[in-house]
Image (cartoon, rainbow, N blue to C red; front, side, top):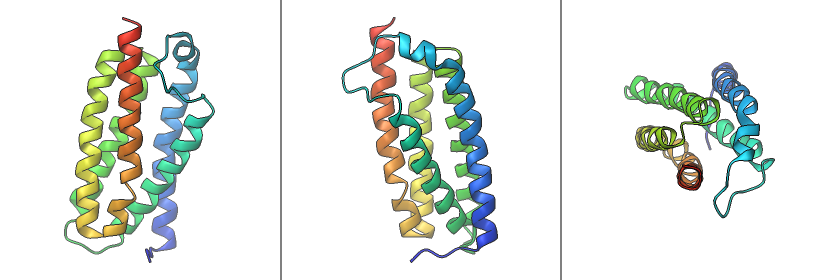
Length: 156
């Protein structure tokens, strides 16, 4: 069972959801442009995105808190990569929804995917469950890459 200190968990959720909120604001302001472009097959309904992202950010925040409280000498590097991927996630929203740079956003998303894979590996080496919880994030980013690439392809 994953156990972490309540204070760490609260801080982790606050920090993580501040990034989620910032990305959500950018997404919300650009959603009309997203809905107006041609969508690839398998595009889910718009209401599903905030549901999935809330779940993913919750898993990220919980895992990060577990890693932070682990006492591992590898923790600083893992938390640094966690912060990097959170920042990259926000900037993807800016590139995709804010600037509608679909090809550049796709390339950025591939880099984000790689940073999440590194984070997953680092988390896994510290706490197996905390690492495995990030698999859902990688799967969703893979699907997001498909959607992102499809939007670029259909709207260039």
